[in-house]
Length: 289
Image 1 (cartoon, one colour):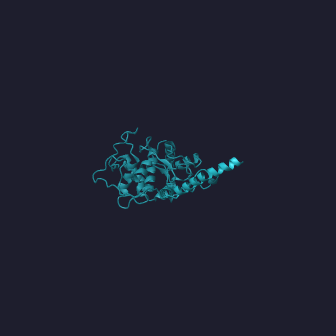
Image 2: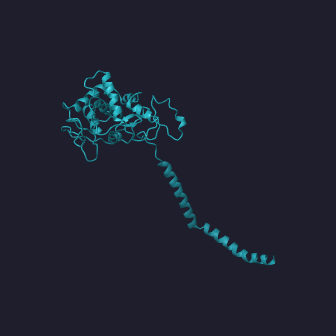
Image 3: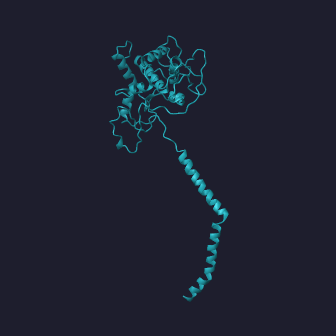
């Protein structure tokens, strides 16, 4: 016991000196500056993270639960792991506004990049070409909004299939919240948001804007016919039409229990059958059986 007390008395001054040294270093200007910088950096990171936290953007269906006037009876509350989407026709396409590219004043070029279809003398057009044609003929003055362009193109696509075996467009529509949407058209015109569009757009960075020539071709005639039939409706009204029970869009989302994966392509056979049924019901001659 006496030896232990003697050892403690010898070690105590050394331990006290060590504690004093540690306190001195901790209070030094260098240590305090480093601590403040580390704290500031953490604060800045937190502020930057919260300030730039991405907002949930409008996506082509995604895993969102689709909602529409005909989908309200679906029990969303039982799907806690799936975000709910409004899906109402009042929503608009997102994006930032940009300056439209003016097109040449000469004759409208044909969609030369499109592939030939099985129909003799017929070209499969990029959907942007169809949208451009509506703008060129009917929207040069007051414009046509993006939502309405999408639906006019969809009805052109569908009614063409009522009379032809091959589609008029090189790309089919997808299942989005606001109805059928052509992804190339979305990419080309999303920057306009809900503003009226008066200038045609190119479908890729290396091409010039294209339209369908206004001539006696069937492609040209169906564009005019679609405008006469649907041009008086707003984009919202046309969107609601595509949501009606029994339409190809409604059948597609119902088959997925109203939880649709992103970029889901609509079934061309469903679209063909639906519009051929409409053509027969209205007594149109030449509709394909």
